[in-house]
Length: 200
Figure 1 (cartoon, helix red, strand yellow):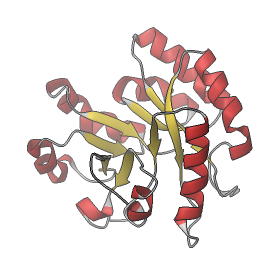
Figure 2 (tube, rainbow, N blue to C red; figure 1 turned 45 degrees about the vertical axis):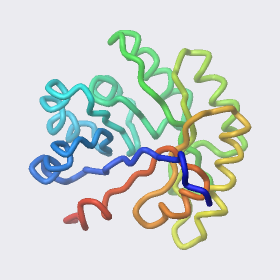
Figure 3 (cartoon, helix red, strand yellow; figure 1 turned 30 degrees about the vertical axis):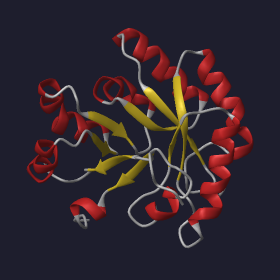
């Protein structure tokens, strides 16, 4: 693949890590960080974001309806919108807060019962409904089935993303980011490769 003029955004997945571990990356000038728990993100990032307006915070975990108000306040991107019900709550809350959240629709690309996400066949309808309620849907996101070639699923999602005319796409993590690069992902979620293994 030709990587010239191609520069994806790297989301440093800082979930579970204390701010002192993250600080060197902030000081270096990195802008995109990912968290998967709303309350943890609010505690860690509120003061930092007030001081540094360049920081962009990404919600990469499942978002519960009762956390939407706080999530809308602290996050700039949400990668896990998977239903019209959740979309409506975000739309209502961003109107109250006079804030525009950038949204990725999470697609259950492997049709796995244990994973969140809209089915690929229902994705076009959800994107259309989200746009009707003034959500800023910028792209699709997926988590390929573990133990299977990621490329197959990245290809499916990229095709749907292109079909819908969406400009961004959220593909790839520490273990499959090289595959994601082949599909011109614009956002990559990297945790372990940056911060090391997490304490469980």
